[in-house]
Image (tube, one colour):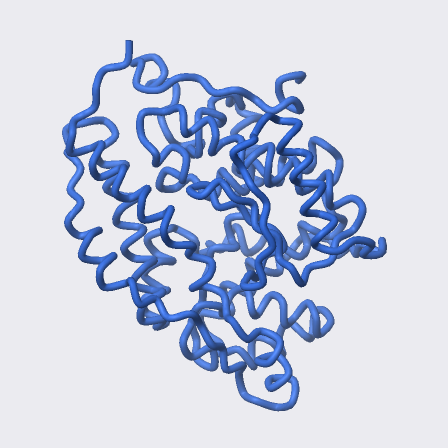
Length: 358
């Protein structure tokens, strides 16, 4: 029988979860005027003039986060405190949008690529995907809804969203899949996105909801790299990975490193030497979004987790890691999942069909 948790721990976890339910961070991270800013930039502006939804809630959120003090004597206390601290640093970055605030987020999250990762990123073979884009966002929404229904995830919804850099993202706290209303998709993308977004992101969230703390559903600190690495591994398992994905992700890793020393124009020109204008713009936007002045050095480095995460998960599984442990919720390969299971602190989670049949 699971032991009751300290009231202070439960209160901190529920307060943090309630905050995640109220605020969609992507709405404040991504520019509102991408098309207009790109047109001005192509016309000769030194950097795109991005407009953002103001984070008017930030001061109240910071006061709330600073007041959360989970007990450090419980095994989950330090972990939850780190999640609170990471959320506070992210809110500060979205509030003042300075390069220094995003650098602090980079340091806290361990996103900065090291020399070994950069070397591997540069070694990726370039490939392209010549298959045409055949469907719009509305069609994909219907397919994702059907996949959720087949998995009995009836309390999850799929919504169109115009303020996104990604084509699809999962909001675990709200149990929503968001599809970029401007995006186009290839036929292969349906199977790929079901494996990535539903069979990893959504199912890990669902399993995490069965654990004693909400943070297992929204994401333990340090879990993002495992989360995205496992999602890319799932794409490989259903043979739906996009040709050239590793090369593009490797280029993003390099761009994150360059962006710390370059403004938007210089970064764009560097990327343009390697790929076309669409590629250069897309990557520069990804690593410069959120910043108040993209003409200056500074970076939002989160996208490093894709390239590094896939390699982390592959290596962990090759070393004997049990994929069942990664489905107790949104945990990292570094978390002591087996210890928590043995101690009765958490329970095992269900696997998606692609892994349960393995």
